[in-house]
Length: 363
Ligand code: PLP
Ligand code: COI
Image 1 (cartoon, rainbow, N blue to C red):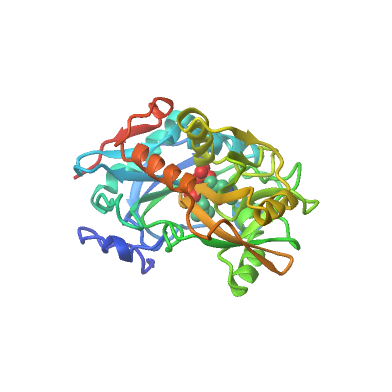
Image 2 (cartoon, rainbow, N blue to C red):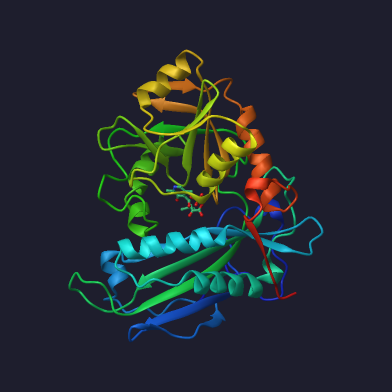
C-alpha cells in the first residue's frame, strides 16, 4: 500500500505555488538499521509503508527523534546546497542521548542526508528565492526504537530513515505576519523535561493547545514557561523580540529547542547588523507593556520550515495587541533577505562563510 502523496517516478513535481509544506514525497527513501549493537549498511528503497511491529517501543512510548533541513538550487540551477548540516547532526545526537537512542555519528548523519538529496535530484524544486513563497526540498530524518517490547525500557533495535518532500514555506502566508495566541492553560516544556530535544512527544503534547488557538483565529501558540511568566518559543520556531532596538530572544534554559536558524539570527544580528543581542528570560509582561508603549517594535520567529516569520499581533488574556503597524518590520525583512541570500549562496558574509555545503545530485 502506498500513500497518495508520493510523487510519481520521472513525472515533474507540481508548480512551486501548489506545493505547500510537507504534502508531497519523493518516491524513494533512505534506511539504515541499528541491530545487534551496531549500525548496519544503509539502503535506498521505494517510499512505502514501514513494516512496524505493533508492539514497537516508538508506537507505545514515543522513542522517536527527528530533524528538519532543506536543500536549495542556486540561481543557475547547477548547484544544490545544505545549510549547516553538521548542527543538525549534533542536535540529533543530543536528542538521541536524551531519549536513550543510539547515536548516529555526525559523518554518518551527513552522508545519509547527502544520499537522500542525491536520489531526490529530479524532485528538488527549481530556484524560486524571489517568489513570495519560495520552495525547496525539505528533508526529514527520523530515528525510532523498533523493538517489540511493552516494558518501559529503551529498544535494542532502531531505524534511521530519511524522507524528502518538495515544499513551500511552513506558513502559506509567506512573509505576511501571523497571529499568535499566548498560551496560558497548557505548557510545552518544563525544567528537566524534553523541551530541548527534537522528539515526537513534544509535538504531540502541543497539538491540543494549537488546535484550540486555530479555532479562535490564531495561527500558532506562543508557549510560556511553567510559571506562565516568561516566553519560550512558538509551535515550530524560536522567537525574537525587538525591544528598544535590541534583538532579544529567550535563552537556552533546557526548555526550548536550540534552533539552528536561531543561532544564525543571533550571529547575523551581532556580527553583521552590529545590533545589541540579548539571550535572556523575557517576560510576557515586558512584551505586552513594550507593545503598548511602542518599545517593542517587532516580533518574529525563526526556523528551518518557518524561515523568518513576522508576528503581526499577540492575543493575551482575551485582548489583541498589534505589534507596530502589524506589518513585517525592517529587521525581520533584512534578516529574511540575508538568511536566504546566504542559503542560496548569493551573499558572502564573513560570519556565515562555513554555513553552506554543496551536495552532488543525480540529474
Ligand atoms: N522550535 C521548534 C519547536 C521547532 O520545531 C523548530 C524547528 O525545527 C524550531 C524551534 C527552529 O529550529 P531550527 O531553526 O533548527 O529549524
Ligand atoms: C523544522 O522547521 O524543520 C521543523 O522541524 C518544524 C516543524 C515542521 C515541526
